[in-house]
Length: 438
Ligand code: ADP
Image (cartoon, rainbow, N blue to C red; front, side, top):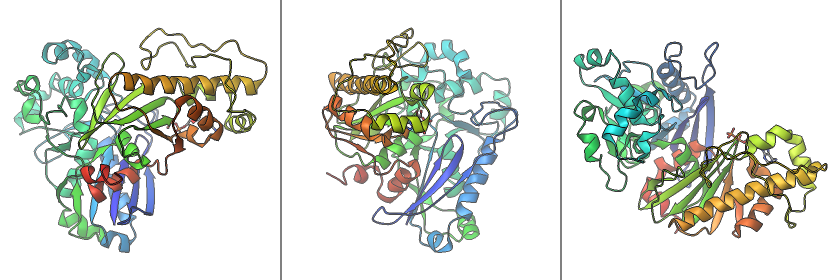
């Protein structure tokens, strides 16, 4: 059996699968929301996030049925991308983690401009490298350094360390926003030239690669097979992609949640900061992605869940809507149109709510289709099939509209759970997993 652990924004989830990838067991635990600050708050002083993650890890292991724990062969963990910790040489955090959305690194823009090439993804104010630079600029930095070596770890790396005990490893999915070059599989020279930072950088391995066996103390405590391998992890959104069932170049996954995010499996990597397009490496393939600000949050502004279901059922998806909207909550779009001032276009609004919803669903499908077309124009593999995840995946009317506009088969993902994708990573590793359906 194989265990995938998904550490998300509000809680953590465990999923156990069998040798044939059948889900066998799952359970989850919520993180405590600190008083007065929402879950995911980047507040440094109030919340012991590392403690919460550690105790969630132990709760999830403790909750495994004994027969499952004893039958485990491998474990992998995913965490939120660009959530980082600074640890001492014992692996203990020397300060609170900085969460994925924490943008205090925006104060490091000038430093980043001086060291990283223009247009590089690390210039984002939430990048892992911006966070490391922010730590380096703090008065305590010298004090932390004088007490021994410092290690930058991502959330998934640190939780993996608690299981295998090897300090200073990450995977090339988590390392992307640290500046790691996934094409050459090396840190770039401009980053290694930073004498104060380079010793903190973790060694990068392939996601799913075995890093060791479980520490005896952890195995004993939770009755886990002492030979259980602990594998390098991945990020939550890649884990969700791995869960989706997409394996072949040209297959895409659209996530219809609050926003609309597309990911396309390609033999060619794309990187274009203008549209926020970047590529994750998946073995010898690439996962090319873009994110639009349109999506379910706009639908929610006008319709309740039950209305969405009832009104959607009254739409004939074979008929194109004459309404041409650009549904946004507020001005500003990045992909597939890059215009920080693009206004929402939601008029004319017909009196009939069915016609209005039809216009919204059709307009979002058009944006999705433009997104895949843009990736194709930039050199990615042409789209052959789309899997769908997120709240909008359950809307069969929307699926039919999207299929008409995309011109390829559209289906709901058989699995959408990131923990499932991470369990698959523990089961097969990345390379053989990606080629398993060829
Ligand atoms: P996130 O994780 O991004 O918050 P979810 O994947 O949970 O989002 O999906 C929530 C979104 O799904 C909501 O914004 C909602 O508008 C949309 N949604 C829910 N039900 C439907 C439906 N039947 N048709 C279209 N969209 C829906």
